[in-house]
Length: 562
Image (cartoon, rainbow, N blue to C red; front, side, top):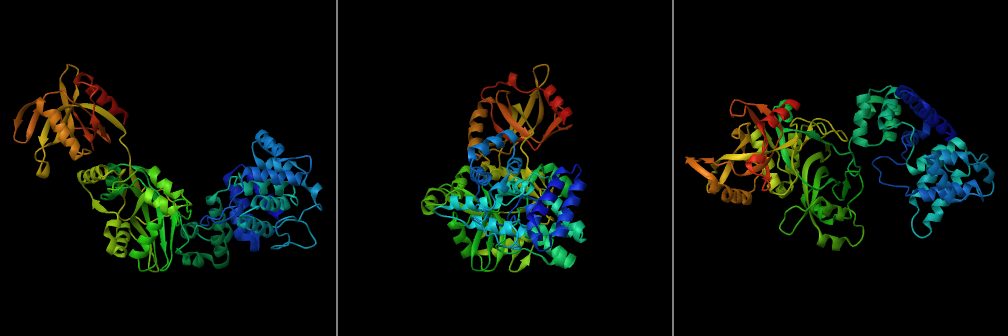
């Protein structure tokens, strides 16, 4: 395919006003692509390499401007190009504005492989295959003098480009195609053009992360070929994503929820082919080298090929988690990894299994995938995230409290029956949303704890001010409180105890708690007429007295706004 043909379709797609017109132009492009189909399926999205391939051109604006200036002639330099880009707003229009043809014959074949792919020896025109070969050659350049070599390869391309070709070549090189075509458009074009069901294309893209490969298989092998595509150990796929949600929403939708701790770390996919370990970040960057201890762990723990999903967490000497920024220090470290390993220790926590010993598990329910994960890491059970399936909101709150006490972010809520859907942010995984509001409430009662907490107060009755200066109860809080805090709260409240009946205490209104919650509900249980759903202790408001606490009127207003 001539590169000018690709550029014509790109221009038509960019000019289209309706989504279906854009899709139709892309469909026609794919049908005409023939042997260049995998390349144009990527290029039309502004991708030179498949999404799973971490290879980069490593071409910044300055280098691109220098190549454009060289192709434009002696009276143009990189600063001129940069100034025009600043004025125009994007590099494609600026590249198209120069008369590159004036330089042809002076050095058109400087750099790059002018005869690669389908190039015609009798023609100076660009082809898609030739451009692709040149850009791959450019990506492979490294070492001393690499900037000059890359500039010369780009010069060789721009010098032979027409206005339209230079417009989309410049955008492609800088990853700024801007024609309104994304992965979804190409997916639909594959389905329409090669007459295969869109859901089959979608699944094939999930397991391959390669629009070019899927397009070729759809064209050559149809639906059966797409169904035969699967995960490949060593080829990363997008991570399944979560959206924000609540315990109430999870239980309403699923009746029961799979609950696990949410770690404040970095997502890592582990690929083990039986001999070699490769680690990939959420963005599918290869992070194997910066994390040697994770590699060592996997080599010692697995004895069969697998793809695992998990989190790498930076930890202190006592094993407690460190802030997210600390794990980033490890990810960014390319040199002196041994010293970085001494400075910041990390642990791997696996929570899902996508592939085990030759079997893809994407469509297997979550709980079964977790069972397979536990079996794979049988000798390293501490590395497997605990998964508790519960329909009890109180139990889920206790799990969250334990996670917070351990220094982690909170909890994840997952549909126990859900499949693993790479790249999807659906409703089957929920990040427990932060409290939508907080209230400052007065402690008017308490209860002694049980078991090892029998000597401290463990549950606290909360009240809001009414209009007459009295207090009306609104609920109890017992979660989000550490053992150390319980000791402090007991010392703080004991001087204000007015009476005791068994384990229950009547407390003088004196101490104000800041309390988070998910929802305010009408309730006959408490004298205010309301109850807090899933209340959590956030702290003592030392700066507030009972007269400064929130009122029942404010509670009513908040309830009405929900």
